[in-house]
Image (cartoon, rainbow, N blue to C red; front, side):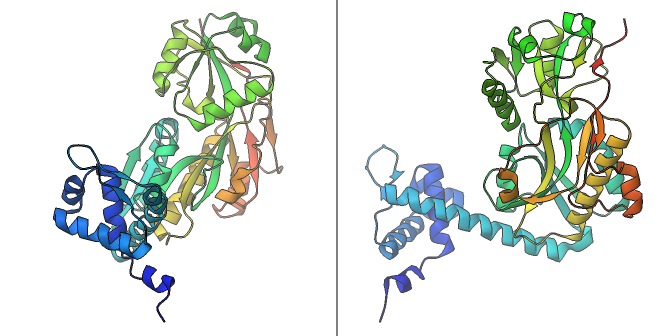
Length: 376
């Protein structure tokens, strides 16, 4: 006896690929060009898929009007995209397995990591893995990078905890405290001490445009009764800092985004217990992780530990988390004080563990200096 379930076993990956291409291209002709098929072949695949699922999936208005997906088509497309992403991830796994040590490692990154962590990490890692090709992909934020991990286009990416829903697992590298950027001659820089919410409420803010961590900062301020007065947004760290230096406003930014050699600005620590930005490195939890990928993660942990030991104003962490673990509340900052969470400095812990960081341990190494004011 043939059941409805048996009919669905006739669905093929190419049917889903045709549906995805049509949704993206808006026509059978462009979808066929994208897939390298003839237009009639794409039409036949969609017709077969509609027959198997028992629903009309494509609206065909005729004439010059673009085609579109029906409600059933949109619903099926969401499942199709997940299945196709897993197919691409499987392909990437087998490619990585076949190439071995002499293959490639694809890593996603964003501005503040690219300027502060990545140069040291790349120098040390490429010295240990000289035959490995590192392919870097940069984006303004991790929202654009995490889908690449899901599809198997990236092996690893730097990201911000907590993670959005998806097949992700990662390790937290640093807790990067927020600071207030002000012009060098600002009264806040001259008076010393920390900036309060009342200080911030009186000043125009320059913020980031597409940044998950920035939205959490704004939510934190609103929850404390302060409506931030944002006069300009940019996703370029240099633009934000330059406009602060020009006196256009102040900016609440993670400390690692700041160019410390810029004498035009001053960095003021916050009195408020604003949760720090949690920088992590993330991979696909269901994919094969090569020896090179595992080594890169360990090297990133060690580089970040060295940043902390060098008194950079960040917080070191080494807790492996899946996306389910990241849905809880963010840990608050410690107000700029040097405070070991587990009582063991980062360097001593690495020596005791032969370079391996113990899961669950974290060291708060936020800079003790409250105001970094340029000389003169």
